[in-house]
Length: 287
Ligand code: HBI
Ligand code: FE
Image 1 (cartoon, helix red, strand yellow):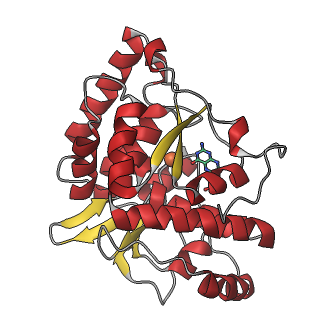
Image 2 (image 1 turned 180 degrees about the vertical axis):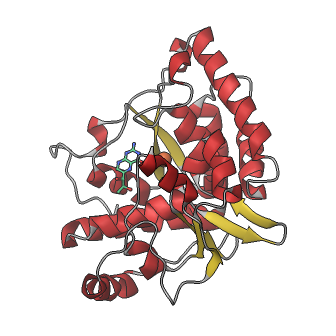
Image 3 (image 1 turned 60 degrees about the vertical axis):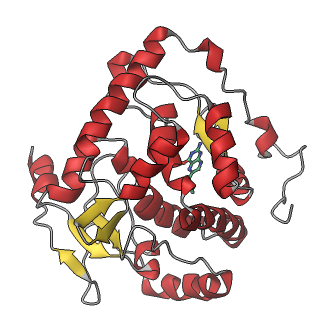
């Protein structure tokens, strides 16, 4: 495997993080938590999520009934894009994460939040990781983007430019929007697994919505504690950027000269689809 830069004796090697999903161990309460989350999310996503996400859910058998079995999902995923979902206990180190993606393996938490944590969890659980992330991996262009992201991450880690890759992931895979003929649609898993951000990202006057630009995104800091102040918008739900290392490495050098941007900053050169009034975050600062 060309991307295998870690040996099994290295503490970050994926083998130290992989688990069995333990499908038989979920309780009826766990399945009921999934069912409640999935039903609520499907209802709010209607007319707001890109079509390929809903197609992916159905093709993978990710239902509103209960927690999906990775063995069933993986048979369909392998046959379609050559990916598989692997179970991990929580966040894995960056190098581990990139190594797995470069091998077309998506790490997903196997645990599910407790009923009292329905609306907020600190670390990604199976609902965020599987319902939010996995449907789009049935789409070839997205599957290729994630693999390229993993490979670029391994290079970025060696070059000290990890923060640029983390921003790219954040503003595309987690919080991306896309233009369609029917209007803006959600493509990001962080939005697609949150009922409140599903509505906020598309309908609030508060955040900026700016056309995606690779360099612009990799200069931009993000917030992890609240809704985003800026959402970046792909030209279409399959316009995932090509991550060519021959272009990325010089681009990172150029961005170092340009300096970073705050989450709400707008530039003359931005393609502004909506100039946010910033009302939501301003009200919170004044509170
Ligand atoms: N681990 N399980 C898991 N899931 C993630 O999304 C994840 C991770 N480790 C690192 C990470 N994300 C990000 O910091 C990288 O995109 C940079
Ligand atoms: Fe995520």
